[in-house]
Length: 267
Length: 180
Image 1: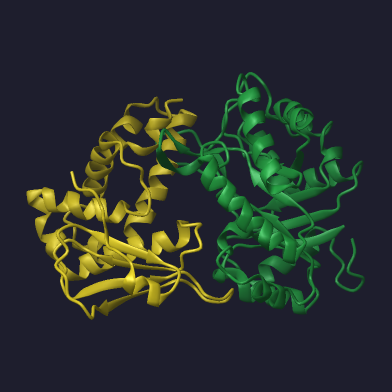
Image 2 (image 1 turned 45 degrees about the vertical axis):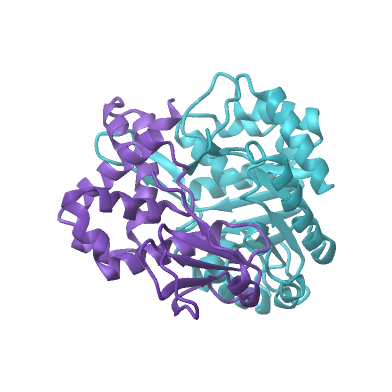
């Protein structure tokens, strides 16, 4: 299994360079839409031969118009031709609603949007010319149809796959939305995994909710779930995500807790 | 849930206490708070009641149907200008600069086109503009600086130019942002 981290922008690039040079990681997942205006050669130089994967946050393929998506796909493919990512991944959520940008991603309706979402995803996947691995959502509330069932149906419909975010599935369980075990039947189809920190948010007069924050160490509960799900599955890559409170020590500590052995570069 | 509630403090307060919807709306508004005030500390510290200002603006902005895109701070500036009690904030040069830079920075981080730079003038500016450049290398952050224009022009409304380099930027045509 390859162990990697998420490259999102200038704020974490120096730390990731150190992780590469100390051989603490052996792949980098790039939030590619933040780097589309940078020459691919510069990214190649930065990687120093370390493999990469592409994570996409701003395609907004459910709502963005097709002309803009085509243009975006062309830019991503141009990067992909040069950097040869291990995989392409994206998010299934709404980021724009009725022409207005949402400050947080909004979970889709699993009860009756399968065909509509399947059509949009298949079209976007065709534009990229590569299988898309969709990250599971850190749900706040249960829906009648489970997210795991919906994803399974979506993958059968479109040929896409699951980017299994262990901490998001843990958050969904802690929020009472979906038991972690609901994912176990389909994680065998997920070669690429994520894990990161989350926080319990407890505003006054509101229900406390766990939120995907990537600002603290991976929780013990997420590590237990990781071990449980991994025991029966073959994982090709694991990206450990930090977006805030970034430091070499924080990242390295998480990698060690997840079992990464720096000496042999394997788990 | 009514997704619209994500952006309106008034609607948030009407949601049932201890509900997940209320929490999500509070968290969403918290993101907006940081988006608005973090790059504009002078605005936050100069407002008599920053919370009241934020909630009134967000409720009005929700009613307006505008998109909450990179122009959000420019909309806020217009809103401050339209409110008698906030007029002094809107005319404060330091606050204007912070808000123009915040809008330009937001363009840098949200625009996915090949364009690399933006020139932004606020309504009423004549000799100066904010020049913003997306980061050029993997190691550098976007930059936003105040520049003097070679050709002075009175901006009758907020206006901007976008281009892939500085030379093209100078030749590009100003685009006006629509006013109410």
